[in-house]
Length: 203
Image (cartoon, helix red, strand yellow):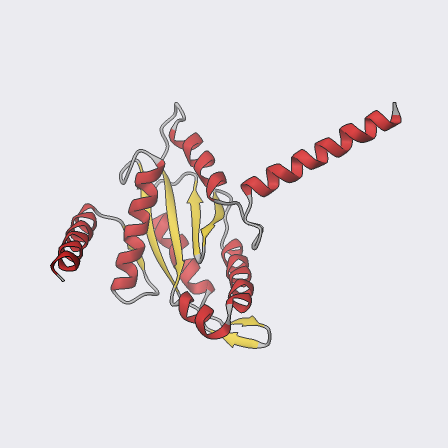
């Protein structure tokens, strides 16, 4: 019986480990994109309609850090960045790393746009002081794009895409700033992609 109990315990521990690996980013320990998709889907499909939001945080010039300092240094920097974002966490938010230098803060409920703006400003402020990695002090800035449910999309893909478009706009207009998604951004980006595609064909 004791051997059977040990086997069951080991199996449960193994299942818990697999579950953790499936839903967490191994580098930072943050929840990952799969976890975000499931949580956001649950919020969207609730019977009671509530507003939620995605605060998309993208590290400025991170490719330059990887290219000059190496990927190991870049990974350690990402861990430090994730810690700063966790420090900005509130009772109604969760921080996710969805890949590379891209992070999402899911706001499960809010009433006014100003609440989201305040959260985003606090994130920018969190990077006012330098980040220390391996004895090197680095000043990091981030660009932030925000999309809200249901105004900017009624499904996961639309909300992520529109938050990403807002980040693109934040970077395009100078980085280290906050941009809320709006429909004209989508039109401008679509037009730009169309022009670039036809320029490549012409060349």
